[in-house]
Amino acid sequence: MMFLTDFADQAVVLPLVFTLALVLAVQRWPRAALALLAATGGTVGLVVVLKLFTIACGPPLLHSPSGHTATAAVVSGGIAVLAGAGAGGAMLVALAGATVIGVSRVALGMHSWAEALLGGAIGVAGALVLARLAGPRPPRLRLRWLAVAVVVVTSVFHGLRLPAEAHIRAASFDAARILGVCRGATR
Image (cartoon, rainbow, N blue to C red):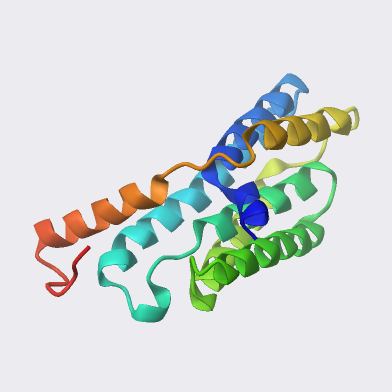
């Protein structure tokens, strides 16, 4: 399960998104490059904000929305958009990506089903935003370069992990302490 979940770690997702955006810009589809960066950044940003509020003070079943599940959905759905799928196709691919990674996160004991579902919903929404913002695909877009970027970046970075969760967790408890909320919250 760890092998699967590592595909959605920020150590893989961030270089992949930046590389895909660069490939899109070089191939003269800057609108899609910006849409990919905005949708992924918005998805990750929303998950981080929710984590900051829920880790220290959230209900037991929704302690930390799954960022892995959210990024799996937005990136897989985004790749489907770049390959020519419409919003419907992007949503199906995003749901599949969210399902695979969400199940792995729950199986590893990293998240509850509610946290995986929330992360998946955020990621699918991000993929749909990307589909809306990207605009029409240029007729001469070379999909092989996008495929090469996906294979190379995931091969190079798969298995690496960024310790983002530990920093978000500490920030959540620090904010709760400074703001005087969630008095019973402890690290």
